[in-house]
Length: 447
Image (tube, rainbow, N blue to C red; front, side):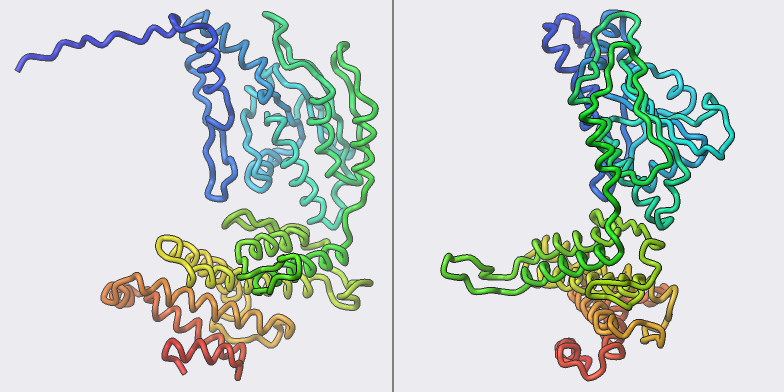
């Protein structure tokens, strides 16, 4: 056979109207269209392919103009003397970084330089490590900073200085760019209200065309002066939110106005439980959990419902209760659903329960037995976590052929059924003579 003649002509991009070309540039430069979403549903990194800038001079000029005028393309350069800062921001703060090193240092289209240092750290500012982030990610950045300070019991920030240099981007070949409006100043400055007790904070204009808006700066400083919630307040709020979640798990008859839960709303309950975690500085986003502020709770409480108790013990008990309740909610959702949602909910229940059980096995007791040092107030909740995780596993095992499940044991792994039975029996050790536990064990032939 002869070769087929190639007749496809290259697409004549420049024949498109300018408005359509701008739409294409907008798509190519939109962060939401050029990113990788992590398993936690958060942008993990941006994946810009800017090779099209090199197509020709006209494409370069048109695309650069769009880069400069699109409102989301506002950038911040963070400068610190600490080498590990950018990795800390990217991994723990979940803030995607656009540029580092020389590229970040020479990038001219930034609207703010954020310089963070410590007076005792003797280093020339020119030697600072620099990286670029989007301005719209500054709220996430400052919340990570807040949590870092709480993890040092509030003793980190008094050693740090912050300088915010507002500027208009350097655009040598024209004046098209996102200018420093009051709206943009608010977007830049107000997130820093999350950062408390700094040694010194200054807001400085680096551009003669920019005047720092005093009202916006005052609002930022007012927020900075608002103290962190005390350990007592955090734990009290967490308890309150957990109890609100419990109400969604109950079927409540409607009142005279027809208000009430005709059936349990487990989705709403889970949302409240996640908020309860956040109230005590444990951030849960899908399957990712970040635990902050241990040092903040490392003392005896002096007021509120938990007065006289140690903050870390109270926090641990609330954590175990919340895991038990979230696991229960997902099991209930799974049992009431058809495929594929049934397996999805059961898998979530199993994940939440096993994460806590594996931590317990690793740090306390590998044999799934109660430990003398485990808080009494959390023992039943821990037993319920074993029970509901075992239930989730047994229900999931129904979708695994018995022969395949048994074959797993020959490889040295526990089968799903065997591992789940172990969890169910462990629940009895944690909650002896408990009617709910015995009823579930009987239903699976383990009485």
